[in-house]
Image 1 (cartoon, each protein chain N blue to C red):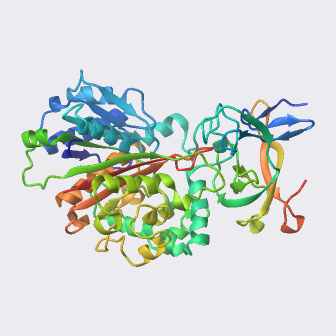
Image 2 (tube, each protein chain N blue to C red):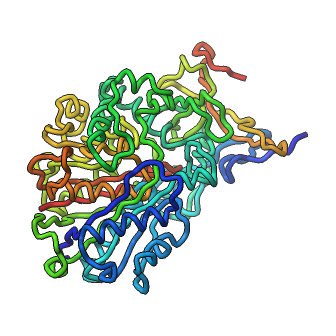
Image 3 (cartoon, rainbow over the protein chains, first blue to last red):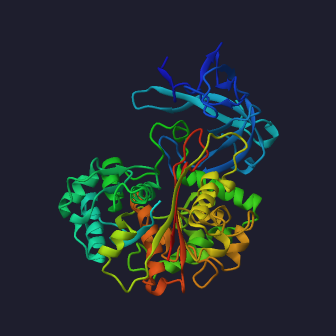
Length: 139
Length: 388
């Protein structure tokens, strides 16, 4: 089995067999932030609870990049997804370009984002459309 | 606070200077400013340099070539507002009496950067969202999509600042591009991130710009250009975004709105009535279209109509980027924040030649930069207001 690493420290945590996004809900201001930082980014309070973020959200805004970016080949669909916790997450979107539209419902999945030259697989999250009828390549 | 005056300005032509180092470019711009002011570099009491990619200690390496040493000097990095930050810190030093006269310059050689790191879209190193493909073009492409959905902008509106600014750049001797483009030519250029095509993006550039600022007393003593009306830096603000949540709207970016409002209050002016000319960060055509309302040039939600009315064109109510802006002038990252200040000074002095805004008395210089995880992006704005 090839070596796997998560693309960014603290972006994903293991929960059973699955990788999940963990945010921080502040005891003082009640806001949830992601990824978890040293103190609440809204009010600098230290105490709060780590909380699993919802898997589903709404697409706030998106772009389709037509040139390579780092390890990604075009077209690169990516956007900002608003989660019920009030968190806005940026991620790549795996879907047919024709179905991507502002306001659509998206679901988080995890998988290999790219493979390093030494074979290390870099794992992260991306989003797919919630409904099959919208053309999402659901796995 | 003491009043702060513009004593002299200088810059290189913006464009490709592959044979020149950042220090070469910075020294050329600073020397041009001393020649413009007709004063000795030895008068300087402090110096600031804005630069994103350096090299380290660029300020000392540049200024020793002009005989400037043994004074406090600093290189500052603040994304595309690096040059604005150099101007701002010098403004503060003079306004609060720390010193009487100093130099702010900005420099960037993207040719040098590309030789080291390759030419590609730039994401912020180590940033979570950058690792997931976020770049400046993809951020502003999403913003353009919102302009079309929320403000009714058409592709023609998105391209308008690029058409206007390339036209302005034709007669600017310092401009990287000197060519007009039609809507069709802009849309036919290679697609970067829908709807942003290559000709809706500023080019990657090498260049430097410099400004000498001083107190009123020093201005009286050192000013040799007595034919010029005295131009003041009446306000200077650096504003930084807050933590991002799902309520944030990039069409109502607080760094722009609060920064512009604070600067206008400091200068004692009303943006929509008093500003005669704006030089601003138009790294992407749609970005300029989105900024008219945020900078207070028109009421919220009316930026597209402001553009369609011709208000932002030369001869309009408030010309925006009469220099050609980043889109035509070019964008040597650290230099641009200084360049917008010196172009605004040129306008107020009446020295902008074919690009002159008739009767300009009040001008705004704005820069905006940095897209990052967890912060309302772009993360920092620099706004200066000049008056005469």
